[in-house]
Length: 205
Length: 335
Image (cartoon, rainbow over all chains, first blue to last red; front, side):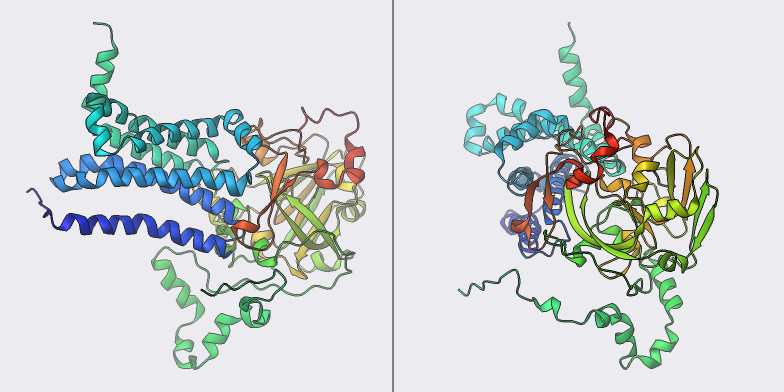
């Protein structure tokens, strides 16, 4: 049975999503500034925003399968904002690294991006994500026509790069990143036809 | 808008509570008009209620006792606050997250304890729990602690020279290295029975030193910090502290020190030999493959804006005391 959400309810639900996405991060910085985030608030804010970005990316990937499976078309209204919040969390993640970890030592910041493969991978994901964020407005979407979908299919690569970045960053605790990878594979499984389509296209006819 | 400015030296509200009261707060609450029900709800009963929810929360806080020792001379660098030193720990036996050892380790039983000294020695011996505090002269030593993850602390340890222990054992001519081992007790150490919690390490945790490193006056067997016995998360009841090496060399909750002829296997080196060497001397010129070791964040007081990045010193600033141990060695290869 399809579930319909009245058009009137959507702005309220959106406000709720804004709150759910913003509250954790406002609270995080409040705690961090007041030294209530454990002994190393720097590590805490970096991890929280990084994991937060991956969670939101996976959530954004789960929206269209969930909308189809549960027959709740209205869910699609929330996909863009969740994707944009993933961008906000990723941006905070990088700003945390720049301002609190390397403390505006720009040379160290740039060296680390190019010298450490896991940071290179993470930064690549972030650059793609930035491209998606700036082209997310309806106006630009209309202008880009077919190219918009092509560009936004990079979401699948971004999430993969994000998970690889996480896996590569840990010392030995690989189980959590592996769980994220499994979730990613599952979410891509729902898109197997799309993925197969790409593989076929690339094969010589 | 009222903007309240505070100086670093100002006491905060949380500083006011007497520590003894703080540590006994659960007992105190229990004793406050809760006697009737309290007698029914014994600690074991409470523990089993928690167990229903799969919670590892122990019934009571680990008890630290005050130690008697001779004090170190004042140290020029600001100490890391005790609260931070005892809540930010890499001790995967009690969970791989930094906050977990302080939370999951509180029920750890350290008495009885046995530290066995064995191997290539004329006089093997065993230190029981009480011996740890009475066999050697205890002194306070304020050391920098540099983690391989590029953060650091300044900690007032209490302990005795490892050299004193080595001398008492009378090593034979075959004793070239010391092999250290942490307690293996999956019942008490949740990280040892659960691979996810334990960060995928094969236990028991192993470490090692060359015998001349062990004889260096800086090498400390620590039984306490900030004037008290060690809490579980910092390696109760006895741990090694070798301040010129990355923190993972300073093995915790030691039950065995074996004198051996060949270089012993060490846990992080087994796990990732290209990232963690046997020597693991603090060296700003040799980066970890995944991050720079040229500088570090010193953990002191204050929130996120007060965290300072400082240059990392060769041998963590102890070069004049230990550099001689490594003369002629290529420290880029033997990292």
